[in-house]
Image (cartoon, rainbow, N blue to C red):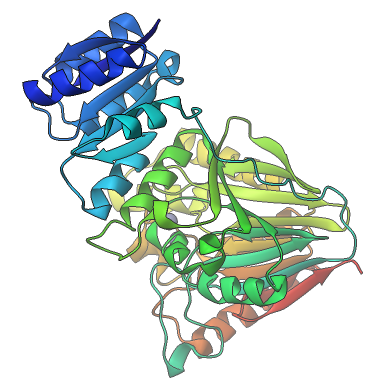
Length: 435
Ligand SMILES: [Zn+2]
Ligand SMILES: [Zn+2]
């Protein structure tokens, strides 16, 4: 016999639901608080749980979240119930992992029907093609760091935050979802002409300038579009939560769960994986929280995307200066970390990298997780990168300043006898690898 734990503070509701469920062939275990209900769930591992949202000592959201955290309870169907008709409560219930949300009074037929549904009814979306033909194309939709900066002073390089489109044959890969993704979304919809589309999105981290455009990404509202969002281990929970929270009703009128498309989150456990026709390697950046850099290897060349990173050696040198200390082991360690980054970058065809500050600004922004442009250029030279795009431009840098930083970077490469090409990433700019 299938077992169900029924958690509801109202005895009359419990009695009515229990009667209906018994008639439907369920063994029902009743409880009137969230905490006691969760104990019953752990003890009996039921097939299903019905829990009212407004339950004392552990509300329905909390109970559901705790159930979803238990690996052995993944198959338990969770139905949250409430008198609340607010769409936001329903969205939150689904976001914390509930399979369904029923508004009271609950009809017996409705209850039995929802319990009969399969655990996860979402259809798997078609997988993207694996064969890449044609060039690898990079397009810059957002090149700014920290906050969008529209205005005539930034019009040439653009004011939108981080978003880069990468085409590997037919594969559409998006690097970060800053405000630039809005324009990209519109372009993709024009291109698709109503046909199904697969999109993969690699997000480096959940700082706002890398996710704030996602609620405005139109393809995610289209039922014919499949959006795979990939991130590393714990970061992906943070990502889902961050995307969900920025779309809660206090901040945005449409919830993440109202997006019509297949939006899936994939937790990566390895630092390397295949993404369509690209092979992806990752590295942890020197940046607050969990932040990744990506290297995408394709038949036409390798692209590294590392938008938020503070080079280790200068960080340590300036830190020691500020602290009035001298530590050779500290310096040696920092240099060894830079070496790891250089190995990661080795001989890449394109490097899109953090270069937010110049050498004068850097000491006043020490430990903010961003690099002095001199170091970005030096890392690229040492790694024998071919093309460097300075990226994550500071909101206080106008077009003239960015132009000057790119020219300085190019001169620096020449001085060192390097063939490195240095440019500043420009919104609307395109770069091709292969033909
Ligand atoms: Zn950033
Ligand atoms: Zn950041």
